[in-house]
Length: 155
Image (cartoon, rainbow, N blue to C red):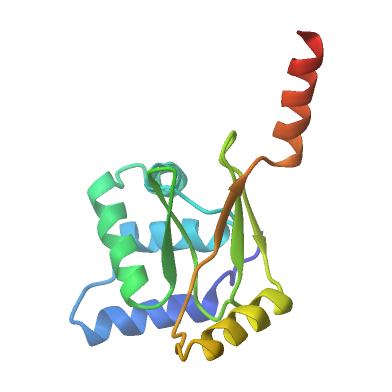
Protein backbone atom coordinates (compact mmCIF):
# COMPACT_ATOMS: atom_id res chain seq x y z
CA UNK A 1 0.00 0.00 0.00
CA UNK A 2 1.32 3.44 -0.87
CA UNK A 3 2.33 5.37 2.23
CA UNK A 4 2.48 8.84 0.70
CA UNK A 5 -0.95 8.94 -0.94
CA UNK A 6 -2.00 12.54 -1.15
CA UNK A 7 1.08 13.89 0.61
CA UNK A 8 0.67 17.33 -0.97
CA UNK A 9 -3.07 17.42 -0.21
CA UNK A 10 -2.36 16.43 3.41
CA UNK A 11 0.07 19.34 3.67
CA UNK A 12 -2.50 21.72 2.17
CA UNK A 13 -5.11 20.51 4.67
CA UNK A 14 -2.72 20.82 7.63
CA UNK A 15 -1.85 24.37 6.53
CA UNK A 16 -5.54 25.23 6.13
CA UNK A 17 -6.35 23.96 9.62
CA UNK A 18 -3.42 25.86 11.16
CA UNK A 19 -4.30 29.07 9.32
CA UNK A 20 -7.85 28.89 10.69
CA UNK A 21 -6.86 27.92 14.22
CA UNK A 22 -8.35 24.43 13.90
CA UNK A 23 -6.83 21.29 15.35
CA UNK A 24 -5.69 18.23 13.51
CA UNK A 25 -7.32 15.12 14.89
CA UNK A 26 -6.99 11.41 14.28
CA UNK A 27 -10.59 11.31 13.09
CA UNK A 28 -10.03 14.12 10.57
CA UNK A 29 -6.85 12.40 9.43
CA UNK A 30 -8.74 9.09 8.95
CA UNK A 31 -11.43 10.84 6.91
CA UNK A 32 -8.85 12.67 4.79
CA UNK A 33 -6.88 9.47 4.23
CA UNK A 34 -9.99 7.54 3.18
CA UNK A 35 -11.04 10.37 0.88
CA UNK A 36 -7.63 10.60 -0.78
CA UNK A 37 -7.28 6.83 -1.25
CA UNK A 38 -10.62 6.50 -3.01
CA UNK A 39 -10.88 6.99 -6.74
CA UNK A 40 -14.68 7.17 -6.58
CA UNK A 41 -17.25 9.91 -6.16
CA UNK A 42 -18.07 9.35 -2.50
CA UNK A 43 -21.27 9.91 -0.60
CA UNK A 44 -21.10 10.82 3.09
CA UNK A 45 -22.09 7.22 3.88
CA UNK A 46 -19.30 5.87 1.65
CA UNK A 47 -16.73 8.06 3.35
CA UNK A 48 -18.06 7.23 6.82
CA UNK A 49 -17.75 3.50 6.10
CA UNK A 50 -14.20 3.90 4.74
CA UNK A 51 -13.01 6.12 7.61
CA UNK A 52 -14.45 3.75 10.22
CA UNK A 53 -12.15 1.00 8.95
CA UNK A 54 -9.28 2.97 10.46
CA UNK A 55 -11.11 4.82 13.25
CA UNK A 56 -14.36 3.05 14.25
CA UNK A 57 -15.43 5.98 16.45
CA UNK A 58 -15.72 8.42 13.52
CA UNK A 59 -19.22 9.87 13.44
CA UNK A 60 -21.38 11.17 10.63
CA UNK A 61 -21.21 14.76 11.93
CA UNK A 62 -17.40 14.65 11.87
CA UNK A 63 -17.49 13.43 8.26
CA UNK A 64 -19.84 16.29 7.26
CA UNK A 65 -17.68 18.87 9.02
CA UNK A 66 -14.45 17.50 7.60
CA UNK A 67 -15.88 17.45 4.07
CA UNK A 68 -16.85 21.11 4.50
CA UNK A 69 -13.26 21.88 5.54
CA UNK A 70 -11.89 19.89 2.60
CA UNK A 71 -14.07 21.95 0.26
CA UNK A 72 -12.99 25.22 1.85
CA UNK A 73 -9.34 24.15 1.55
CA UNK A 74 -9.82 23.47 -2.19
CA UNK A 75 -9.34 19.72 -1.84
CA UNK A 76 -12.87 18.50 -2.54
CA UNK A 77 -15.86 19.49 -4.60
CA UNK A 78 -19.42 18.30 -4.38
CA UNK A 79 -21.73 16.95 -7.03
CA UNK A 80 -25.45 16.61 -6.42
CA UNK A 81 -26.63 13.59 -8.37
CA UNK A 82 -30.15 12.21 -8.22
CA UNK A 83 -30.75 14.01 -4.94
CA UNK A 84 -27.59 12.63 -3.33
CA UNK A 85 -24.44 14.63 -2.70
CA UNK A 86 -21.18 13.03 -3.74
CA UNK A 87 -17.67 14.36 -3.27
CA UNK A 88 -14.59 14.08 -5.43
CA UNK A 89 -10.99 15.22 -5.26
CA UNK A 90 -10.48 18.72 -6.56
CA UNK A 91 -6.89 19.70 -5.82
CA UNK A 92 -4.89 20.22 -9.03
CA UNK A 93 -7.36 18.12 -11.01
CA UNK A 94 -7.81 18.80 -14.67
CA UNK A 95 -11.29 20.03 -15.58
CA UNK A 96 -13.65 17.23 -16.48
CA UNK A 97 -17.35 16.60 -16.89
CA UNK A 98 -19.60 13.67 -16.02
CA UNK A 99 -21.82 11.10 -17.67
CA UNK A 100 -24.21 9.73 -15.03
CA UNK A 101 -26.19 6.54 -15.42
CA UNK A 102 -29.73 7.10 -14.19
CA UNK A 103 -30.26 3.38 -13.68
CA UNK A 104 -27.27 2.37 -11.54
CA UNK A 105 -25.79 5.74 -10.54
CA UNK A 106 -22.36 5.02 -12.02
CA UNK A 107 -20.38 8.15 -12.86
CA UNK A 108 -18.02 8.35 -15.81
CA UNK A 109 -15.61 11.27 -16.10
CA UNK A 110 -14.63 12.70 -19.46
CA UNK A 111 -12.84 15.67 -20.97
CA UNK A 112 -13.43 17.13 -24.40
CA UNK A 113 -11.38 19.95 -25.89
CA UNK A 114 -14.02 20.26 -28.60
CA UNK A 115 -16.86 20.83 -26.10
CA UNK A 116 -14.72 23.38 -24.26
CA UNK A 117 -13.96 25.18 -27.54
CA UNK A 118 -17.61 25.24 -28.59
CA UNK A 119 -18.87 26.62 -25.28
CA UNK A 120 -16.19 29.33 -25.35
CA UNK A 121 -17.26 30.25 -28.89
CA UNK A 122 -20.95 30.37 -27.97
CA UNK A 123 -20.14 32.47 -24.90
CA UNK A 124 -18.04 34.83 -26.99
CA UNK A 125 -20.81 35.14 -29.59
CA UNK A 126 -23.26 36.37 -26.96
CA UNK A 127 -20.74 38.43 -24.99
CA UNK A 128 -20.72 36.10 -22.01
CA UNK A 129 -17.64 35.55 -19.83
CA UNK A 130 -17.47 32.03 -18.38
CA UNK A 131 -15.89 31.72 -14.95
CA UNK A 132 -16.75 28.06 -14.43
CA UNK A 133 -19.12 25.32 -15.45
CA UNK A 134 -20.10 21.75 -14.76
CA UNK A 135 -21.58 19.40 -17.33
CA UNK A 136 -23.62 16.50 -16.00
CA UNK A 137 -25.06 14.36 -18.76
CA UNK A 138 -27.64 11.77 -17.76
CA UNK A 139 -28.50 8.54 -19.53
CA UNK A 140 -27.79 4.83 -19.35
CA UNK A 141 -24.39 3.15 -19.16
CA UNK A 142 -23.39 0.22 -21.36
CA UNK A 143 -24.18 -2.38 -18.67
CA UNK A 144 -27.63 -0.98 -17.89
CA UNK A 145 -28.45 -0.59 -21.59
CA UNK A 146 -27.49 -4.24 -22.19
CA UNK A 147 -29.47 -5.38 -19.14
CA UNK A 148 -32.51 -3.44 -20.36
CA UNK A 149 -32.18 -4.93 -23.86
CA UNK A 150 -32.03 -8.47 -22.38
CA UNK A 151 -35.17 -7.76 -20.30
CA UNK A 152 -36.99 -6.47 -23.37
CA UNK A 153 -35.96 -9.52 -25.40
CA UNK A 154 -37.42 -11.84 -22.74
CA UNK A 155 -40.87 -10.25 -22.95
